Amino acid sequence: MARSTKYEQRSDSTEGHHQTFTDVEDVYKYIGRFGLSQILYVNLLGLLNTSAAFNFLSGVFLLVSPEFKCREGSSCREDSDICKLDGMDWILVDKDATMIGYFGLQCQKSYATLASSLFFIPGAVVGLAVSGYASDRFGRKKTVLISLVLTIIVSIAQAVTKNFAFFLVCRSFLGMSCAGYQGVYNTYRNEFFDSTSRSTCSFIGTIYKNVGLLLLPMISYFFPWWRSIHIANCILVSLCFLVVFVPESPQWLIKNATLAETSDVLVRMSVLNRKPITASQVKVDTDMEKIGKNTSGNVFVIFRDKNHLFLTLTFFYQWLITSLMFYGFYYALESISGSVYANFAIMEVLEIPFNVLSSFLMNVAGRKRSLLLSLLVIIICCFLTFIPLDFSDSWNLKRVATIIGSKWGSSSCFLIIYLYTNEVMPTSIRCTGLHLCSISARVGSFIAPYVIGASNKLADYAQNTIFIVISLIAIALIILIPETKNVAFKATDFTEKTDAKKADEVGAV
Image 1 (tube, helix red, strand yellow):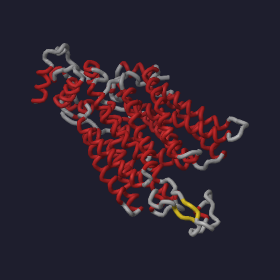
Image 2 (cartoon, helix red, strand yellow):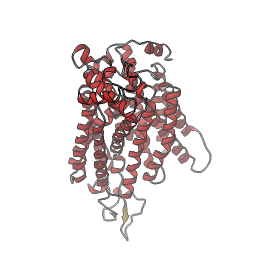
Image 3 (cartoon, one colour):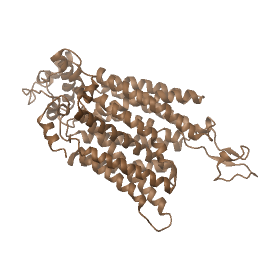
Image 4 (cartoon, one colour):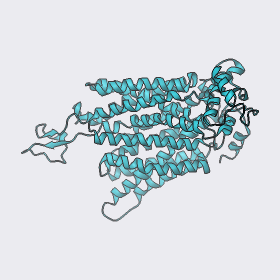
């Protein structure tokens, strides 16, 4: 109470002190859609995205094949398959540099890749299921902090382990903890912004993701020791604890706390934005005040009728194929010429202007049209494979163009569907719904290495045909779902009927 009184005293002489607010987004419009408080929160929370991106794609560099050299006088050549040679004909250059070499898995790399995925992905699925419910039921902030504590413990364990079986167990817990805070991050961040600013804050989030993915090849290249990835991860996770300075989401508090708790956060934000309001001006009706209990966690609301079921399954499918293509093209980087470290870094740098364009399009054209355009980019790039070109090395050129263009398109799809899903799901189960979609994405990331397959023309034709077909199906489904541009969070709740939602449903096609 003392805290609220202090803020009230500071705001007595400000204009607008007589104005009352009955909705969180009305408060955001008055104190500033992108004020100092939102800038601070989006950047502190962005550290979560840096750490999560670093973790989810660390397997690309953990599973790099070790370098070897031929012994003098042997029949070995530098381009030989060492697994088909006598073990006395070659020697590893630095056994401890890669995880594959350290655990002696150089001839079982496919086993190591499969085992790493088999443990990490199910762990991520469990983490998404648990953290989604926990964040809707107990709060975004508490769930993030608990997940971070588990992540740093597991990262330390991975950095010191000398046993591959124990490494796999740690890998499973790492997937669980990373999925926990990464899934909550997008919802937590978006709930501090109104409908007109969410695409901008989503773009800022992708910058932090790009930073994490740029750090990964740089650390792997300049510190060629597989444990250095886990040490770097511990440092990144430690920085993430700065989120203690971010308050609980006001949107979540409306559903799960009292008016005093909700208004306290909004008043603190208004003071940081230099447009202070008083607690007495906030007249938001919270579920706790109206019915005296927490209403979050009823996930079955999104399956309650055929329209909601269709919308939910459409997003499940979109997340599945986007993840399949996004991670698939990352794994394909190893098959094109040049250093995998340089290719990875260049891809991330080139992705930034494309994400700027996607963010701009979301504000101008809306979520649905931007998503349709991104899928069309993927289809066009995959179709390049089938265009006959009669010059030397044309196949490699087409392959590089396909991978880069499709990677841009799939990254844009991810940027859009994270925001789109947040705006469609009800506030009371927003994290749970988003995490259910993320579970389908984990299925896509799991099968991605096997869909990409070999680096040859026949395989390329088959892979790109698959990507074209699944993208066309996604386009057909997306045309049928509503637009959410400039629609407040409460207006996209399945349980509420608003003029904005009705207008969107009518004009969706």
